[in-house]
Image (cartoon, rainbow, N blue to C red; front, side):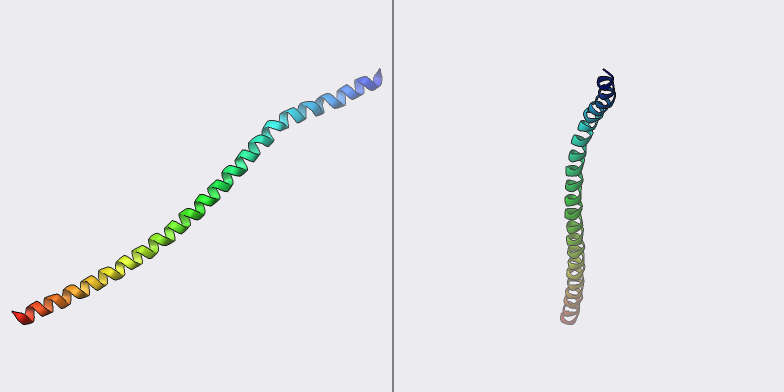
Length: 81
């Protein structure tokens, strides 16, 4: 009889602990997937930022070329007339 009481006092808390831990472990797997998705999106955002910077530099270069062409056009017009 004493063995049954000891077993109940040991096993019941272990079963309760297992039942309490199970939903937490399920949430942890969802959180892990969400963290992985955030890492992927952060990588994509970084790539987009780098692309935007490259496009900005290219646009600045094109603007400088446009300014130079405009200045040359004004010189040509001034010489003609």
